[in-house]
Length: 636
Ligand code: COA
Ligand code: AMP
Image 1 (tube, rainbow, N blue to C red):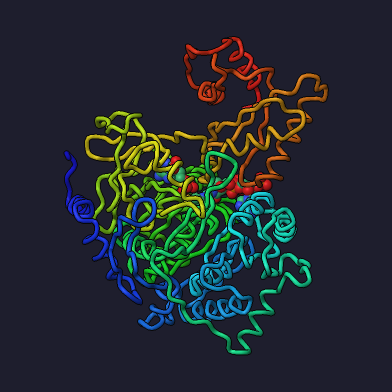
Image 2: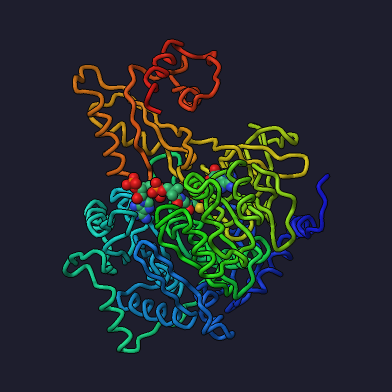
C-alpha cells in the first residue's frame, strides 16, 4: 500500500480477516446477550454458515431497555422533525420504551407471537419506529414496505410474507399532496391471497379514513385502552440466528427478493459501525435522512443509533422545497447533529437551488463533523461541492440491502484514510472484497471486473432470502463459487481502494432508490398495444438515473402513440408506484438487436445519454440505431 497514515484501519481489517471469530467475539461484548453463542461462527449452518449460533438475545432490549436501565432514560432517543406537518416531537428512551411495551402488548392481544410476520406500510412517523421495535420485542418479524410503492407491489409482499397483522396509516404527506395510504392498503389486501387477521391504522389529522369492520382497528384507541389497562409486554428471548426482519428489494425480475436479517449478527455489526465507521459516540445526535422503507432507514434511522445509545433524527421532509434548500442545515443546527447520512441525489437537488451555499451560511453548523453519502455512487462534482461548502469530510460508502451495513467505506472512528473522489474507499472489517473475471479469478489492480465478497460474509449480511433458499444460492452464490456476487462491477486500485462503477444486472438507482428495469418491462409488456419493449436507466442531473421506456406497438394499432405513451406512464405509476419516477415512454418502429435477438440496451443508453458509441459488430440492422436517435430528439 502506498497510502499511509495514522489510521488503525489496516491493522483492524487484517485482524478481522485473519481471525474473524476472535474479531467479532470481541465486538459482541458490546451487546447484552441472554445466553452467549455456542459458536461465534458455525460454518455448518445454512447456505454459508451463521454468526453467533446458539446465542439468545433480544434486539429491542438492546435498543431500549438496556439504555433505560443504564442511565439514558431521560436522554432523547428519537427526534421527529416534520416540515411537512410543521411539527417537531421528541421521545426519550424511557418514553420510547413505554410506547413500545404498550404496542407490543397490543400485538400480543392480536395473537402475534414469535416468528409471526407483521407488515408495516407507513409514512415516516415515530409510530413506525415503535412498531418495528415492538415486533423485535416479541420476536415477530417485521417487513416494512416503502410508502411510494403501489398496491400491487404491497400485495406481492403480503403474499410472500403472509403477515398476521399489518400496521398502516391514513396517509403519507408529500410536498403539495396527501398520499392516501388506506385505499392502497385496502386494494393490496383485496389483490393478495394471504389476508392479514387485523390491521392497525394510524389516523393522522391530515387525512380521515374509514375502518373496515372486523379487520381494521384505530391505533390511538388501542393505545389509550392498553395504557389505561397498564398493559405491557416483556422482551421475548430469540436466537441470534432468528429473523429480525424481512426487507423486500428489487431483484432481476418483477418478483421482489425478501432479504432476511438476523438478530445477533445485526446487533453486533451495527453497534460496531456507529463509532468505528461513523465516528458517533453514545449520547450524540445522529441524522440519517432516509426512509424506514429502505435498508438505510432500518439500519441507521432505527437500529444502529438506538443500539448505540445515540439520539436519532427522523426527518419527514425533502432536501429542497420544505420550505427551501436550507432545510438540511436548519435540522442539523436546530438539533445539533454531529453527522448526516443521505444520498448524493439530495445534495444535487440542494446544489441546483443554492449553488453558492447561501443557505448554509445562515445556520450554525459548528457541531457538524461528517457527511456520509450512499445509495448510489457519489459523483465527484457533488462530493467536491459538498466539501467546499460544508468544510467537513464527505464520505462515500457502498452497501446493499443484502448486506445491511457498509461493505466499503472510510472509517472515521478508526482514523480516516485519504479520500479519493469517486471511490467509497476500503472494505470494512469482515469483508474480503475481490474483483474477479468470468472464471472467478481475481484480476490485477486497476482492471474492471465483477465485485464479489469472499464467503463467509460478516455479521448482519443476509443468510438467505425469505423461504427461498434455492433462489438465494442461485442469485448470489452460484456464479462465483466461494463468493457472494454483489452484481456491482468495478475495480480495486493499487492502494486497495474499491471503485464501484455500475451494476451488472438490470437494477437502476433512481434518486438512491433501487429499481428493476426488468420489473418495469413486465408492466409495459402488459399493455394491450405493446408488442415489444425495453426499459433502461438514462442520466438525470438530479436523480442520477431515471427510467426510460421504449415501445414497439403491435401491428395494426392505429391509436396515436402519444396517447399510448401516456397510458404506459400511468400504468407504471399505478402498478409499481410513484417512486419509480417513470415519466418517459417513447414509441419506436423497432428495437435494435443483435443477430441472436438480444436488445442492445447499452447502445440505446449511450445514444440517450449523448455519449459516444460504437456500432456493435453483432447488430442485426444498423439503421435501427438512427431511428432510435431520431425518436429521442426533443424527448431527453
Ligand atoms: N409515499 C408516497 N409517495 C412517495 C413517497 C412516499 N413515502 N416517497 C416518494 N414518493 C413519491 C414522490 O411524491 C414523487 O411523486 P411525484 O412523481 O408525484 O412527484 C415520487 O414518489 C418520486 O419521489 P422522490 O424520489 O422522493 O423524488 P422527488 O422528485 O419527490 O424528490 C429528491 C427528489 C432528490 C429531492 C428526493 O428523491 C430525495 O430527497 N432523495 C433522497 C433519497 C434518499 O435519501 N434515499 C435513501 C437511500 S440512502
Ligand atoms: P440498495 O440495496 O437499495 O442499498 O442498493 C444497492 C446498490 O446501490 C448497490 O449494489 C450499488 O449498485 C448501489 N450503491 C449503493 N451505494 C453505492 C455507492 N456508495 N457507490 C456506488 N454504488 C452504490
